[in-house]
Image (cartoon, rainbow, N blue to C red; front, side, top):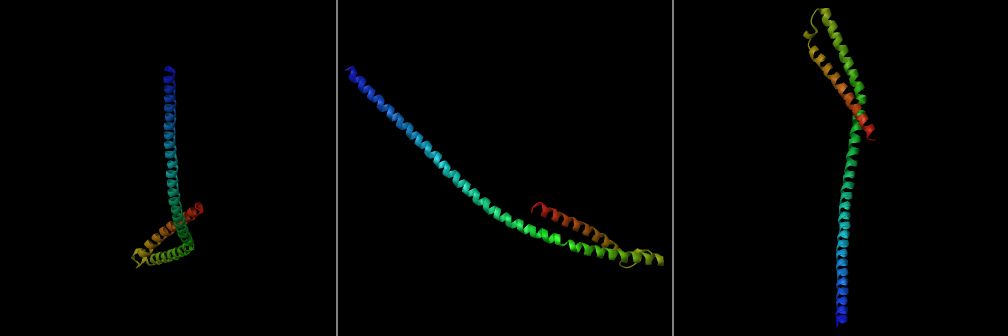
Length: 147
């Protein structure tokens, strides 16, 4: 009878081992399913990021194009700078003539109507032309850098 009990015990052990193996396979399957769902989650995230990135790049490309156009317009004002310098030179010449006339008459140039305004406006215009040229140079360098 002990043989018979040993045989039954052996069969029970075999069945327990197979159930243990089946449980391990179920755990493996659950782990595999989780990893596979991770792939889907990563795919969704990457597709979302790529879509947003593409959209933003298109927007940036348009903005960059607009900025380039603005910079070209700024650079094209350089021709005006030369004209403005001629205006300043002409105004300076008129100022010098007023000073010479005032000296000949023995009066202060400040007593001549318009002299103070002309003197002040020449200073402002010189400053403006200098700043304008700096802005044009900045536009040129920026455009050169981001071509």
